[in-house]
Amino acid sequence: MKKRIAIFASGSGSNAQKIMELFKHSPEVEIALVLTNNPDAYVLQRADNFEIPSHIFDRKEFYQTESIINLLKNLDIDLIVLAGFLWLIPQNLIAEYPGRIINIHPAILPKFGGKGMYGDHVHKAVLAAGETEGGITIHYVNENYDEGEYIYQAKYKIDKDDNLEMVKFKGQQLEHQHYPRIVESILKKIKK
Image (cartoon, rainbow, N blue to C red; front, side, top):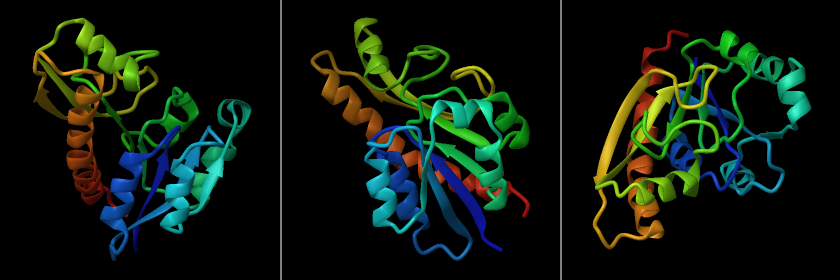
C-alpha cells in the first residue's frame, strides 16, 4: 500500500518539483494531488509534467467548507506537504491531520517568521538585519504561521557582498537538498 502525499503550493513550485522527482518511480510513495490557491501558479505545469492531478481552490472553499478535507480523505492522503503555500492552514484541516502537515520556511526560525514573512520578504529582512547566516527551517504546521515544532534546520553563510538573488539562491539550494529527504524520512514513520 503506497503512502500518499498532497502538496500545497501557491507559486512556482520548485520544492514541489524536487519532491515529485524523488518519488517519481517510488514503489512506496505516490504524490496523489497538487493543490493551489493560485490558478496561474507554475506548480500546476510542474504537476502536469509529472502527470499528477491538481486542484485549484478559492478562499471560500478552503476556509468555509469541508471540501478540501473530503478530497484529501477520499484520496487517502497520509502527509500534507506545504511547498511555498501562503495561506494559513485552517483549524479543521490541522485537526484532521495532526502531526501530518509540514512546511518549509526560508529562514532559521523563530527569526524572520510570521504573517507576511515569505519568499523575498524573508530574504530582504535577513539582509536588512545584517545577518551573517541565513537558512531554512522545516517544521510541523500548527494554527499560527511558522510556529509549529521544528523538524530540521540548516544554515548557509551570507557574505558581505551577497545580494538578494545570491541569498535566495543559497537558501533554495538548501531547500532542494533537504526538503525531499525530510519528507521521505517522515513518511517512513507514518503507519499505513
